[in-house]
Amino acid sequence: MTKTRDIADLLDTNGDVKLGALDNVPAADVVNDITPQLGGNLSSNGNDINFGDNDKAVFGAGSDLQIYHDGADSYMTESASGSLYIGADSTIALTDAAVTQNKAQFITGGAVNLFHNNAQKLATTSTGVSVTGTVAATAFTGDGSGLTGVEPFPSGTKMLFGQTAAPTGWTKITTDDDAALRIVSGTVGSGGSSGLSTALATPTVTGTISGSTGSHTLTTSQMPSHNHSYTQRSGSSTIYWDYFSIGTNVTTSNSGSSTGSTGGGGSHNHSLSATFSGGTAAINVKYVDVIMASKN
Image (cartoon, rainbow, N blue to C red):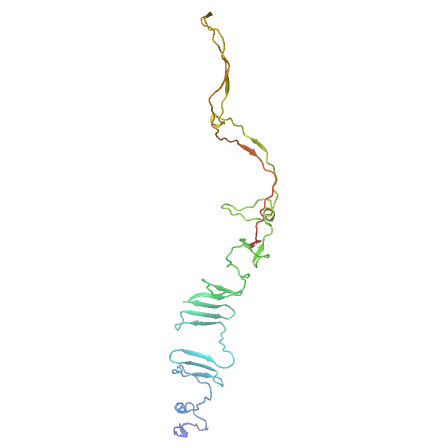
């Protein structure tokens, strides 16, 4: 595209282009020019560069980096084999369109912060990650031995384990060996002197049974039914009344007889005080060994 102008209007007497002489010379028609090129930097001169829907800002010989909007969503894609780097000397922040709601912050030499509804919930630290709120997970790997402040059991908690060695994070207690467990409703403690395996084996019971029964006086009802015999005599005798004989001779004779029966044959008992001696207690109960360990 050209425009005819007088050369005298463009050059001075020395043949040089006059200052401002080309200000009104129109630029090339970039709409119709299908291969426009810049001879230098393009300045927006305080204006915007507008891209329509699906119009792309394309970078790279193979159109590797593209920035565009498709009418609904916006995209910045790197399609080559390299990486997409977004750098800043201070902080890279992801916010809402009004730049009032934080979503994520990437601080150079510092933390990476993640937000929920503009409230910080997660931050990386020099020693790990700090979470504000509740952590919910569907799975967890590892034994958790390196975790602090999240143990389900406070330090010093004692538990039983069906294994020889204490698990990671626990210390085996060896002061209580071959001992039974007793459930109490008050203060816990310990006691006894016989080992569990000895007490549950087949121990010999020693001692004696000796003593005496208590005394008891039978009542009539407790006596067997019985009677007593007696002899009735008969013969001659003189009956006197106040030293005067007033009677005649009476003939007497001896004859056997008995009293009436008494007693009921009822039962009775005696008290007994004694001790036991001898014998074997066949206990030998089956048991399973466990260990007790304390949380570190």
